[in-house]
Length: 304
Image (cartoon, rainbow, N blue to C red):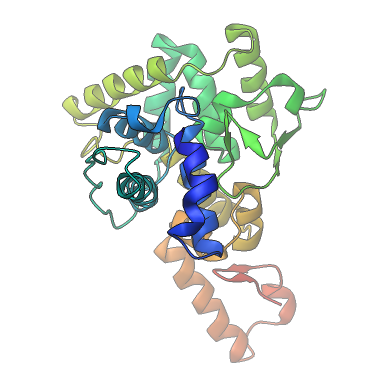
C-alpha cells in the first residue's frame, strides 16, 4: 500500500470529515506527488524524504509556519499507519523554527546588486528576478510556466490549477498580467532554456553564493532573509507605496484569497501613511474638497 492509498482509504478513521481533513489530504497528496513518493510503499520512507520535500516548499517561498503544517499532516499520517501495523515506526522529523514573518522587501539598491551580479554570472537567472519583481510570482510558478500559458504578445499569463506537478497554493487558476519587462524576460527564458525552466538546484546554489558574497562585502546585513521570495513582497510593496494600488487589487495579482495575507506582504512607508492621515485631517476640517482626496489609497482600499 502506498501513502496516498492509505490517506484516501483509511484517513476517515482518524480525522473527522470536514475542512481540516480535506487540508490534511491535500498536504499529504502534495507530498506524494513530489519525486517518486506516489508509487513508493508506505513502509519505504525515511526522514530525508520529508526533509527534501520541505526544502522544496521553502524554496517556493512557503513560510516556516506553513511548512510545519505539512510536517504535522505527514507525520500524523505515518503515526496512524504505525497503529495499523503498516509501518514499524514513523519518520522522526524536526519542525522548523517559527518565524514572525518576513518583514523584508528589496531596496532599489539591492535590486540593482542582484541584477548586476546575475547579469554577469547567470543571465537567465536575472530573467527570473525581473519576472518576480514585475509580477510577484513565486519561484516555483515561474520555473513551471510553459509557453502555452502565455498569450501571443506576452502580455497575459494564465496560471493553471496545477503548477509544476503540484496544486497551486490556493487551488485556483490565476490571471497574471505581464508588463513589457516581464514579457521580455519570459521570452529570454524560453529562448535560452528551450522551455526547460525548472533548474532549481542550479538556481539555489548560485543564489546562495551570490548572497554570501554580498554579505562579505557588507552590502546586506544578513543572508537568512535575502531570498527570492522577497521579490514577491517587493512587488506588492511597490504597487501600494508608489502606485496607490489598493490591497484588494494587489491581492488579486498575487493570488491571495484573504486581504490579511496581502497585508503581511506589504511594507507601508511611514511617511506615506502619515501623509494620508494628514490629508484626512485636512478633509475633515473642510480644508480639502472631495476632488483632492478621491482615488487616494488607504491601507484598506481607496477613499470613497
